[in-house]
Image (cartoon, rainbow, N blue to C red; front, top):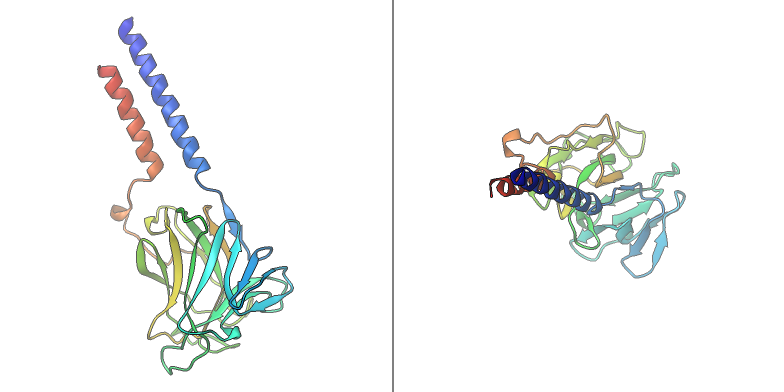
Length: 254
């Protein structure tokens, strides 16, 4: 009877530990859907503005919303047209749109952006669920030529996949929907993700919308990266459960 009571006590403590750990996991992150409306724009020359699905703002240093920040990196002092947030396409839909340092092929300067980096303001980790592309083109205001090579990077890996080419503006092309596979460890518990333009890319501008952060991406999208299952670590929550069960086993044997 004493042994049975010890086993029950150990299992009860393990169950309590699992509950605590799972609660901690669920409270450790908060889902955020960033559609670029209602957030705060910070300008390179100082001052702020709030996006409202009707205004378009240039000369943007960063954009903040729901605890996340989207920061532009520049090669030199940027011209106002380099970085834009708001209703840039005049469709009543806010986006983030920017122009690269050069197009990588003709060395023509369209902007000074070298990278767009997304992270949490408090520096903690998060998951990327997906996003939508509104523009990825070699021709400003026009069609993609198929040679656009914009990379997606994270704190866990560089040049993970390239963004599909897309004609300028919402609805003008396919507006590719990227939905990251939940098992893709390269986008799980990351400190940041970013977009960069390859040296051989023809892209001059990139537009993005609808970031799914700490929540699953929109159904129907694709994950252009193809992680090998053997390279995907066991999710942290399962590891915690395993540790708790191991603790219960040790108590039963003692």
